[in-house]
Length: 410
Ligand SMILES: NC(=O)C1=CN([C@@H]2O[C@H](COP(=O)(O)OP(=O)(O)OC[C@H]3O[C@@H](n4cnc5c(N)ncnc54)[C@H](OP(=O)(O)O)[C@@H]3O)[C@@H](O)[C@H]2O)C=CC1
Ligand SMILES: O=C(O)CCC(=O)C(=O)O
Ligand SMILES: [Mg+2]
Image (cartoon, rainbow, N blue to C red; front, side, top):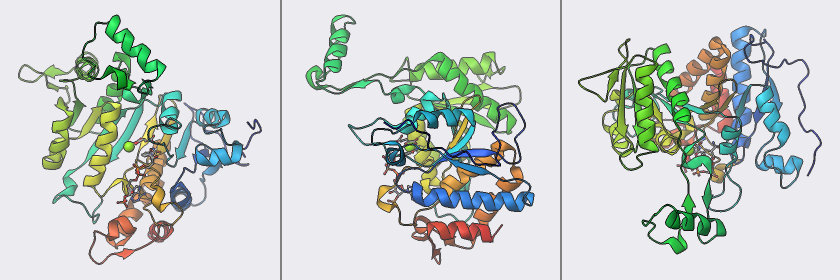
């Protein structure tokens, strides 16, 4: 394994330091990503550079610093190095970063690097706003009614990766413990069961829900919906619901509406809850009734792709992973391997993730330029394949040409 450094720190850039003003020449680490990462990441950088140059007349500039994870890391550092220590150190040290998607094999193979990054950096909030851009094709009659912000707990739940393969020594031991010491009689086929553990804590719930409610207050939103499956998983998902309501009462002054469990905060924001399966039909039938959403890790994963579909798909669904100090922005979608290297897919998701990053830096003028130029490119029907196949009279453009179409409209 190579211990040599492969990170080139850009000369002329300055490190962002948590709690201090953002420098005009910040260094932003980026991970290119596997699969379509090679297509979308350069386009994202080009669009961001153009927006920043235009907004600040050359006075501000991002100094991009490539760091490695995933398949590219194994090429640079050696075949067994998926997440180099210096990548982890840079993500912490440089505070704000952006990444492309990374492959996770199904069944065996390495565990998710994406999940590992979130857990190791304690990026406990996965923030995924879902809004409609005029002109985007959607399966809904009124896609504009979908305007939600998902707060997905990002470090716990079944994603903790505590599991044992069927028939392994570990599974046998855990099953024997459950049967012999805990009196569990409900494992239907103990000889051939894989076993997974789902930790959900009060602390983990509270810090996520606190962020969601504070976001609703700061952004003048109408409600926060706690989405859970607490009728079945009483002490994990049910715990999440109960701890969320308790926090809304004790920290935010929530009072029960008509005997509860729904609450109203002093500023009128409603705190409510919905069971996850019912929520998935409600968001299609009555999307206007939902606003900020606070949920557990697995529910949040499903909900973010489902909601993205309502407003045009994961090709334009952005996201951020946040701790109390570190912010790592990333697209909602994965590596879409069948399109890798074809300059074909929609770079919108990563570009809008970068737009969130610019807003996080306080560079709102550049962020606004990204939104307005994307809106113009879409209304001019200059779109990638995913939209073009559903739109009448659209011009299908490549991934890079979509970026250029945005830049031309800044
Ligand atoms: N954060 C991350 O890094 C994530 C990584 N992954 C990983 O990605 C790999 C592939 O996962 P998979 O389930 O196929 O999901 P993907 O999100 O990679 O792709 C599923 C489908 O979504 C559409 N799509 C995805 N990205 C775009 C885009 N930029 N523009 C337009 N359409 C897009 C395509 O639809 P169509 O076929 O209709 O054109 C694609 O076939 C897995 O290893 C998975 O673990 C998955 C999610 C997140
Ligand atoms: O880590 C992965 O491969 C998948 C992650 C994912 O689906 C997500 O973050 O939405
Ligand atoms: Mg997902």
